[in-house]
Structures are given as structure tokens and as C-alpha cells.
Length: 394
Ligand SMILES: *Cc1c(COP(=O)(O)O)cnc(C)c1O
Image 1 (tube, rainbow, N blue to C red):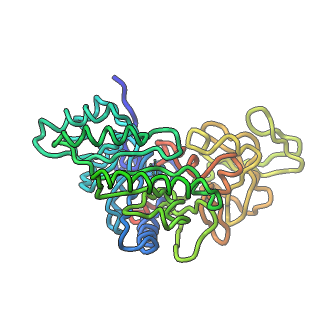
Image 2 (cartoon, rainbow, N blue to C red):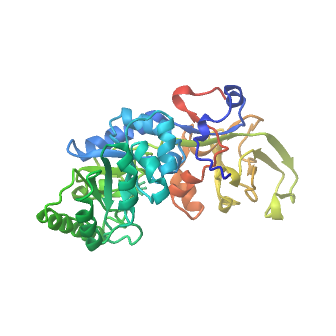
């Protein structure tokens, strides 16, 4: 049997285990998620619904808690990437509409239909399996159709879409509720590709309308589309990044976003070293003076990229201290020679705010040669998520 660890890590373990948890944790401020959703709603206006995209475990924040906070703040849809992620939300007793944005294999169509998790059709062959899954339920099953307007990954071509609509018109058990596309370059507002994609999408929809096909929900925008291309708002915007508090590009007026996530740990050892001592695997760091090093029980197995070796920094006592030597699987070492008074148990901030300083996720991502998305999704399951409204004492 293959077990996929899709369950939200935050729920794992007994209360006692959680209370006595390892001194490395991610803090998730659900009030920030709610405020971001509320601000996005105001920004896109009352004609446009907000879908909270909670795939990949809510971008590492924990899918169910984020979904609940977003729904309470006025999001009306949840977006996931696969059936398992939708099922996790259903198991958390979340009844809201859920759209699978990614691929749904034919074998999974019955489960999706039973649990009222809406599929995207992005391959003509999916229509038959979804219709077959709907028949025994005795009710109509909604689907959204995804059109490829330039991303060239998943999505139907216009001829495929037209054929499919004619086919589905004979399948009473399927209700085509939505039609959407996905933007490739919306985080580059100057790039003309987005306008071309949106114009193409609009022209195709107009043509379908003339053939008598209409949809209750048209959508195209991810966070970047929602922020930089008002013409992409349509009936619904699908927001991940912005809901978690990050800007795809420079901030714009009229929208307020604040990051919900921080990553924290505690000093488990303080070492005094003479000049000339080497630190960590490969001895890539060598002290040039009598030095003080602090060891943190967090490493690349938790999602702190090894690319931060000798590059990243950590906040301790409100000061920045450089990561010294290689980030290893479970530990990293910080040179705290210039941070007086470091003691066992001091809180270290790898991402987030401490006193007057802040290490932004984007900064950490940039140093690691990647984007905020990948850092968030890379936070591993063994990092306990602590939700600020039920904050445990550390
Ligand atoms: C992940 C995803 C989104 C959300 O993208 P963000 O850039 O995080 O807002 C929107 N639409 C689709 C189809 C997606 O797969």
C-alpha cells in the first residue's frame, strides 16, 4: 500500500506531543489570511467572487485552517490541484465548493462526483468518465472546462472545446458551469502576452456564445492577474500567492497584503570556538577570530534550502546573524559572535519579524535562487504549524 502524507501536519500528533513539540515551528496568522481575502474582495469588487487556492497544503500553511479562514472572510470557492487535496478538505467538514485545478484521472471521477468536488475538464476523454461517474448519483454534476490560451500545459484547444460542448449537450448528467483559462505572464505587467491571452479567451467565449453555449462562471486570473489586469477579473479570481500575503510584483494602491507565515526555531547549543575552527559538513566555514556559534534544530529536511549555506541569515535577539557553514538535513549553525548574550532557548526567526527587523520570505527565496511559492510549499510535514489564535507557549 502506498500512503501519501497529504494530511495537514498541523493536526498530527496528540495534544501532548504538540505541546511538547520540537523547538522548530511555523506560525500561521489566520487573521492575516482573512484580512488579505477581505482586501482582495474589496479590490476586485462585488461582481467578482474570490476563490481561495489552497493546493499544496495551503501553500504550506495547512489547507483546512486556511480554507476556513478564507471562507469566513468571504471567499466562495476553494481551489485544489488534485482529488486528494479536495478530500482532505471534505474530511475537515468543509462543505464549500471546491474546484480541482489540475488533472483528474478517470479512475478518480466517481470519488470526485460523490464528494461534490468539481472537476476541470482539460482533456476531451475526461467527459465520458465524468458522465459515467455522475449517472449512478441521480443528480447533475458540475464541471469547469479549461481552455489553453497560451500556457501549453493542460487545457483544451478551441476545436476540442467546441466538440466537447456538443457532446456534453447530449449528457444531461453533466452541467458545464464554468469555463476558464490560466495566465502565463501576469506577474510581468508590461508583457503583452497577458492581453493576448485575455483577448483570445474573450473572442473564443464570444464565438461559443453565438453557437448558444454560455457559462455561469468565466475566470482567468491568478493573483497577478487579479492585481495587475482588471479586465481579467470576470466572474471569479483564483488567488493563492496574494491571499498568503505576497505580491507577485510591486505593491499597488487599493490592496493591502500581509504575510501570514513565519518560521521559527530555538537555540539548542551555544559553542565558543577559537580562531581557525571549521564548521559543518565540508568544513566550508572557518572562524577568523574567537567566535560564538549557535546551533538551531532546523535544516533542509524542514524546507530551509541548502543553497542558504554560508549565505542566509537568521534573526536572533533582534539582530541578523549569518548562517555559518552548510545547512544540513536537521541542523544549521549561526555565527552569533556579534550578537551579545545568546542563551540556550533563544528564539530564532528564519522567516518573519523579530523586534525591529524582518526576514521576508522573498528575500530567503531569492538567496536560495527560487521563488516564494517554492519556499512555502517546501516547508515539510515535520514542521508543526502553530495557528496564532491557538498559539502554544514557547
Ligand atoms: C495555483 C493556481 C492559481 C493560483 O496562483 P497564484 O499565483 O498563487 O495566485 C490559480 N489558478 C490556477 C489554475 C492554479 O493552478
